[in-house]
Length: 383
Image 1 (cartoon, one colour):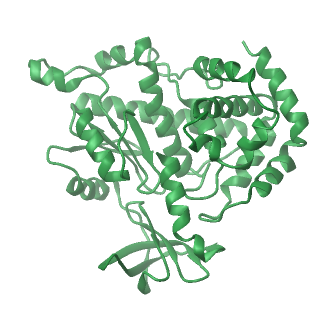
Image 2: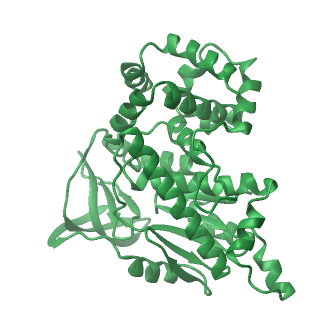
């Protein structure tokens, strides 16, 4: 989902070629016309293209791409830009959502929900645990993250069908997934994994958080919970400075990092499944792929995002992405942090060529053929 969104928006200002980031503190007011309809956006210009096209972030964190042809007026006032508070975001989003939604806030999240309050609180606890784990991990590695400029938003539906209708309206497509992160509006959306609606119909009482935890700690629920954590990891990475929204962050890296964190230990109230432990399903898939893996597999993974965008072979590409991130963090942690720091400085909407991507990687990790041989050897030894 995130891949499709980023590809679409990267193409909007592509005609402008090189774009430049703009450090602005005042509020920008932009009037533009699209499909015969006049629109107004207030926020902060993140990028201004050479031809006048704009990338604007509004006070709720949504990104707006406006081409030079669409733009009719652009003014800047003297009022400093300030992101919405959690209360303002909650009020604004309640107006967009169907009736029946409520707001639950935590230290870093605004959770909008029409499921049970106990499930919303459970989600908030899970997300805050992930946030703390993620920040502590990178701090120990030497990458100092930043506090999110805006509260991170999660939308939680009681019913899967309502979630799918929201997905269709939000990103223009629907599927059987249990959750996703929208890179453009910066929200995670999901539905209640415990079947709360069936309980309501049956007249059962609301489950406690301990009961919810017990249900979702079952082995058969592991992959669905991992999907939510995976998408929430993307959201944290793009809000805490590890990655930049709409910058040319390679998909293999973004997805590999999310897979590295995706499995929590729900049986523990204070811990996470050991970060960096083997992901059995990804390792099994990668080992099955190794018998047919071509000599240019790693090179193609690094050069472009195509292997992770095409339906054919996408599971193998995901498995190799997880394996590569696992290998690099174990064998070359300092170089990996240096690589992440370099990518975190990239300007949104500027695309690197395949050759530039390879050069950036090899400048930090060395000769690719040598690294690939070591990578394959180490993954065969992994137990």
